[in-house]
Amino acid sequence: MLKVLFKDAIKSPGKLLALCFVVYFATISLAVAGFLILLAARWVMVEMKKKATAIETAEAEAEAARVEAEKLAASQRMAAQAKAQAVPVAPASNDSVSKPAPMKQYAKSAVVIPFRTGTQ
Image (cartoon, rainbow, N blue to C red; front, side, top):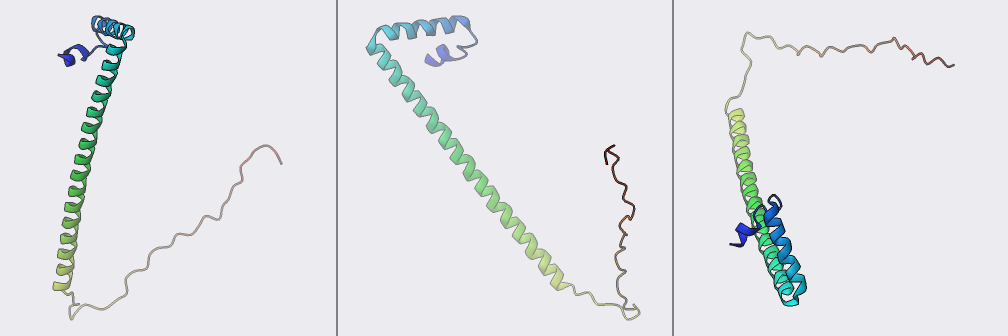
């Protein structure tokens, strides 16, 4: 019942006015005001607990996914190492042994043009 009253209270002027009257009457009576404060505090505590459990669940799922990804990466590395060790590459008897071609080095530009700022 309370969820129906508080849901979309800001969007509906009638609900907002009704809630304002409830708060006004609560300010007149200290007992009602205390009850509403306790009710609001309880609601905040419940919502904070829900949020905390949601965060813990998300962290646990992220940790499980990270561990699974590490296991997959480790198994792929081990498979690649085993494959590299299993297939040795030997040059054929008719291949000539030559050095690889050196990387081409580009010369730096010798032309430097200063900016023309109009001052000396």
